[in-house]
Image (cartoon, rainbow, N blue to C red; front, side):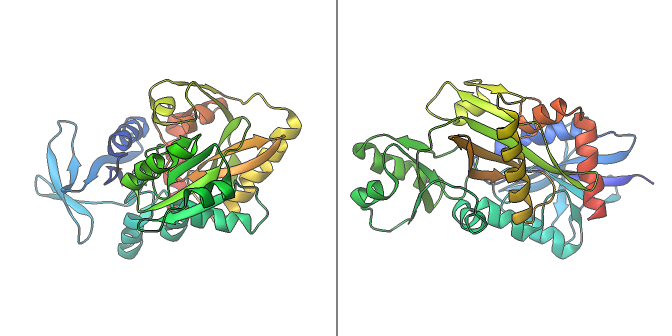
Length: 325
């Protein structure tokens, strides 16, 4: 008997539209002969199963089921395609774990930890992973621009602590740009992270649990037309994404070892894509995305293709690993 797979998408954050696109790609590429697949939109005002005619059926939040024409749909597994809150921060995964439904992501605590940039950095630093110099602020804290600059220098990056897709991020190059950058970050989150500028190529590395083993995918070198790999560079074609990255075998081995170590240090499972800056050929960890983009243009599908893994095989593997875990 075929298993029922709910592909959850949408969410409550600024990334809702990107998530809907990722979820649609997952739905298209999971074999209907192998699984019964359902699109489930998790939105602020409704949780609904959406059929191919865009007809909506409410999700019962007591047990995460839906009823279609008198038939009750019970899901065996959830494929998590929600970027940001509540999918990437672990919130909805805690709910699934409470009601006993398997899912394709890491356990909710690991998801919460990795979504919080400052907490994630504090963990990996303890294991000797290189990171940028950081300064933290909570909304309401007194802002001492001189102190911040003395700590991290200029230019620097100002980021929301809990956000994705580069929403709310600014590169501040002068003292005068600091306050506007901080205010922009506070629109997305009440906690912000200010980091020193690392000068070097950016390398994006997908690490997944594949056929029961940790697999580091071919790496992508990011060459952005903008100041950094911002929203336009990620989604509007303002960057060149070179897979595999143009790096030496020696540097590749360093990055591969670091990426695999970070995945294990954080007790990850399922999908991940982490960003690194090479400074004098040494990897510096920036952040990790645990529900990375899954559209045809996204980095994880590009890297999987370079490894000879089709989207169907990539997504089927995620479901199979969820059942095994």
